[in-house]
Image (cartoon, rainbow, N blue to C red; front, side, top):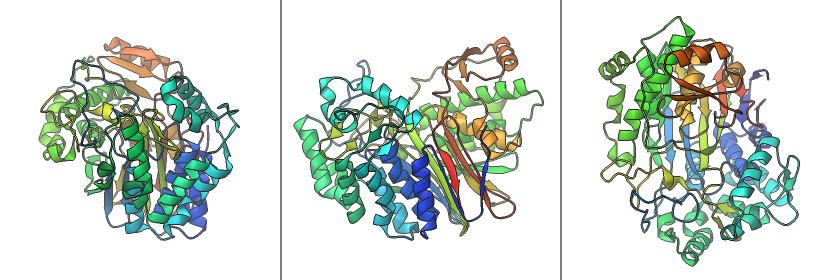
Length: 512
């Protein structure tokens, strides 16, 4: 097991080591935690394109020591989009599930409010890796190979030209480069992302869509704005857990923790059983109520103490079946950063399913998302599809407060796994007293619909059998894939930092 990383001046944690080093470089150059987080996020679009890219959405929580700020950088469905009716399957690839990218504007908006160094400097590591090349890390290489099979057909020639150029085989240590992506990153840096939304990059996206009968247009890009939002929170065993409001699914973690906050069973099997059941209740509510932010005004009612007690009273001694519409998949990067000035950042961005839709805008290196798959197929639902609407969003950065003061950012990537991972990480820290690295590396479970619960290969056999006796269908997974990859930074009592970076990924915590 890795050791927790301690630092006194600043620290960054993420899932790819070159990206963590990019953030540390910015800290050493005089940047603050927001500068470091942005440099890390931008670099991740190059060195971990299997999970994110320039077509990503992004969400953030930023603590300045006095206030916790929330940024929703999700994009909307194009105005001309027309998803098929409910009885028809929705394609995972192509232009139909593509949403307006939100990440580049989110970078510029965060920098405008909090940044210290010049915006272009934050792009220097990413531009260098894109232009000169970098060696694939092992986990990234494995997911790259899977994508190569998924995007093997002639419909994905632009993806192949960019991510499988002649002579390149995605294996650990193989060097990949994209001069086109480097040029696009430079234009975003020089124009503070304006070129992406209203300039030559926007025109390139528009032309590619029009040539392939895609609905995304330059007007959709020009109309995109980030949303500054007020975070939601719940008290859990002496700690405040903070998440973003809808369209983020952060409410799932908060409601589940709220249901459990008055319960402290001594038996670990009982505690785990109640956690699984609380997650089911929380998902049941979220899948009915979370969608476009304009349609979720009363979402905080799910955190009302009386309602949480009612939900807690509904937990049975045996597993209750509940089946969501369909579990959301995902491919996501999460990072955390902190500095000694008091800034702490929880940041997450994603193309949704790995490389996303398989659409790459020719000559740009831009891989577009397939986030529209998260819309509900029910008319009148808060999460109904429609032009200009934001979908239920799996992305959810987390943040912890203790004693009314910032304690630290945390997150667990992975679609439907994210709120379940947040709950398990918080419980490990607060209920089990785990150190950060121990907390992120603990074996995880994932409720998967009905009474089915997947557990990691090294999950306790004794607990697995005990849960099965309570009516859970326990399935031991063949690998740790699908259980999320966590990052965590906490402020120590001495004023420094301690961090953990999930060993399920290639990354690390890099401190100064």
